[in-house]
Length: 467
Image 1 (cartoon, rainbow, N blue to C red):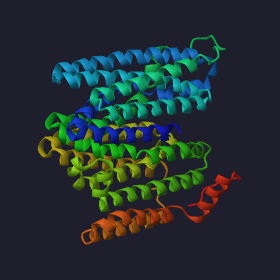
Image 2: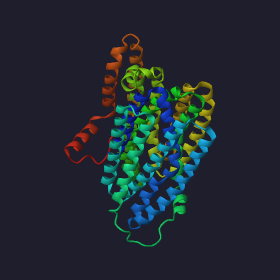
Image 3: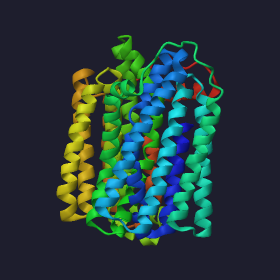
Image 4: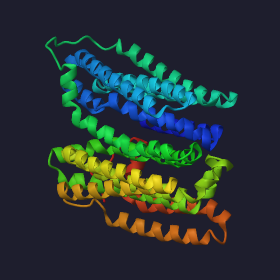
């Protein structure tokens, strides 16, 4: 519920914003939003994993741990604010962009502190509070942006809608924290500085993940106009929206995967990993195939006529989605087996390559260069993660059904793409439907269909996962 409402609300909001502002206005707004996101990664740090784990192990220290984390986040927020001031002094953006950036930065800080409160709910098994507050916030964001869209409130109105939704979230989570029982253990817990030291590996991993996905937009804005940034951001918003399935699958299957590795049930872990990887490989292959055979239809439905330049670019964004899907299971398996440090080092190497590619390709080729850098970065992440999985797990987590399905999807997608030259409208409408039907049939065997039907009916599901 939390993941779905967040990803879907952002996807819907961004589609409205893109349509309302056009490529140039959307580029300017998303530049400010991207900057706020990059700055917010500093106070976000690694609290999402660190605080939950700490509270789970020592629930009697909940208030002390929250207080230490809040002070630590406050220190980091001050550092982020200084970074924003340095950016403003160096780049001297237009006054309207600066105002929007300030509003979105404050909204990002409100969201960050609200999420810190939600980690307390998770650590104390109050997931209903986490779900309810997240749903309310995302619903408020959608309604706020819709109102601004209808009254033509412009970029500043949209930024204020973001701020209002985030402040509402912070207020509600703060109110619910009052229901948290007093600490039963008065012995000192962590200090803010010790919490920062302990969470450093998680903070680095979080920061690298955000930077890999957002620095290209900031660099592109430095060398290209707002219209170019708007076209690139429109495609990237589809990439971000596609994160729903990997996040849902990871949330659902990662505990089983980690538990199986933890108790030494390697065969069970591999079976779960192969199933998860099959779902993601074929789903990513479907996205890439649909973006290849129906780019014009997708662009018209989602963005409108002013984004016509996306028609030739969407297949490349589909490739980015496929590569991200293909690396998700490998990343989860590396963490589950206890090799988080190796995963962080791999991501650090990929981030360095991404930064070098951005600075080399974007000034020379503009938007195509940004896309090439994004594809190369995701490919490097996939190869590094696959190698680490092979090392720590002992296999590639690819079963025969997944390999066959990818081959069939590639052949069908290529055939539909060639056929689209003769009948573009028919292929654009029927192609995605046929590809989706074949993907579902290839991805889910009969044993998993039976288990799914049992789960829907409330019957006990099988204890193990087939291949």
